[in-house]
Image (cartoon, rainbow, N blue to C red; front, side, top):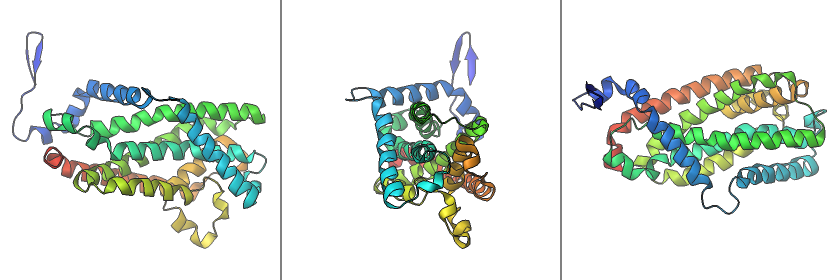
Length: 280
């Protein structure tokens, strides 16, 4: 970049995008804010129930899981002294954030075809901004969680102060997998049909409607390779306290798997980034 008076100019030169890529991410931070705010407005503009959908979706899911797992499958005892509905909703908080972020990120480049084909900027900004907007739904759901606790007269444990750390881990997990699927979705458009299946399937193999102690010990390691297991168990530990032990093993595996997918996602995304404008 060169400066003349009060004006700034971007100089395009061979190899510059590779050399200054991460610096460009900071320089284009205003575009990140603009895209994030645009996605938020688009999500809630001209909708029938608006932000209420962010409340209705996890609430309906919680009711279904409560009826199926607590009443029919007799898993109500898994919650200990905490209400079963609170146990389920504590797991839905990170899961809804992860699923929303994954779905939004995987389709983000396709939804911004005109912008990508006409203007240069680090493409990593687009999926990252879409993941950030999923935090709005998380905050709304967190408010509903507070209302539920007031209704059930159940106070969260002091470990709730650690919840932002588990949210950060959920962000890294969704970001890594999201970047990987985003890059694949540009080249292979049928991946947009696979993502909803992954999200739906993942809901049932994650400890949302049940407690991880239901899994036999001999399968626990394989089961914990799902990075959301440690994250969900961590959320439950931070909210429910003594009703759920600290998930040492599953959390350690979740950190390793999430960091691996973050590395894989960024690597795959950067490798294919040069071809995005042509493929789209």
